[in-house]
Length: 168
Image 1 (cartoon, one colour):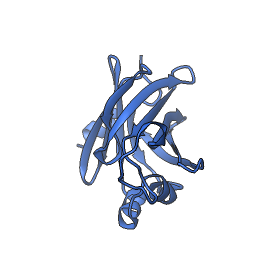
Image 2 (image 1 turned 90 degrees about the horizontal axis):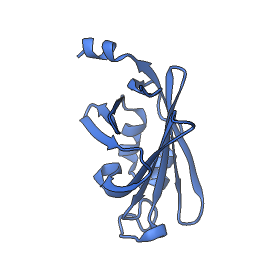
Image 3 (image 1 turned 45 degrees about the vertical axis):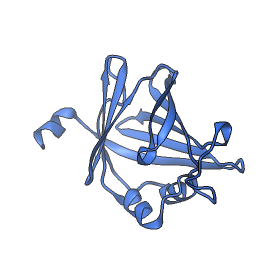
Image 4 (image 1 turned 60 degrees about the horizontal axis):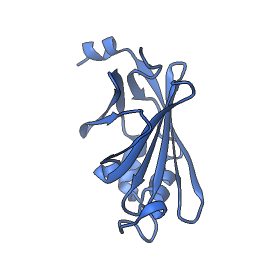
């Protein structure tokens, strides 16, 4: 059975709220934040058996992520290839994918890059779904001081797999 978000999606506008999120929640420097917020990007999602394959492509190349929405914790690589404990599950009756990644080092702030343990480690939660012909991705992170860095929203326009394969 196909997912509502299965297909090829192209970022249609700069990331709203992205600069603040990348700075405060992830500790990304100014130059990289500017590039990330405005860069062209394509995301391709495919359902294959028990896994969701997400390919994220931009001028640097393609990064592949495999997500298994069984709700169990698995080890993997997150933002910037950093090690994470990841849990993925379906929400909203199987129409939305939720992923939580717990990093093994501090991100952003005075402790950026230093090791951490348990609940002191950054938890980043992303929710991915579709509304009509747009895919949305909401990302949030709770900081050590308890403040939640509000969702980062990326709206993208859907393109059929056929359109994408004829243009390659």
